[in-house]
Image (tube, one colour):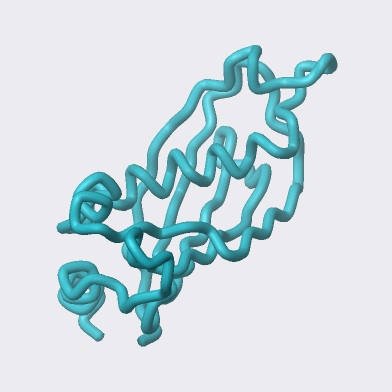
Length: 139
C-alpha cells in the first residue's frame, strides 16, 4: 500500500561529540539523527519499537540514503522531520529532513523490513501499524 505521510517533528541540539575537528557534524551521524526521528515517529503509532520487540518483531534497516546539502555544526538546534513514505507487505520506508532555522541541511530515507526475531525471516508489518496508516491517511 502506498500511503500519504504519517509525520512527526522533533528537535536535537548538536553536541560536540557528534562533530569532527572542524565542528561539523560527522557524515555518519546523520543516520543516528534519522533513527532519533524514527523513534519519535513510532511513538505516535499504536505500537512502539519496544512493543514490537516484545511481540517478537523487529525493523532492521535494509537500505539507507542521505543527500547532504549544507553542514550542521556544533551547538546547532536541528529540526528533524520524519514521514512514513510507504508501507507494503513487510517493508516500510521513512523519509527524514534535517533542518536548521528552516534551511534544509540533509534529507534521506531508510527502508526497513519487518522480521520475526526468532526466525530472522521477513514477516508482514503488524496489523496495528497498517490500521494506523489507513485511518490516519484515509487510504
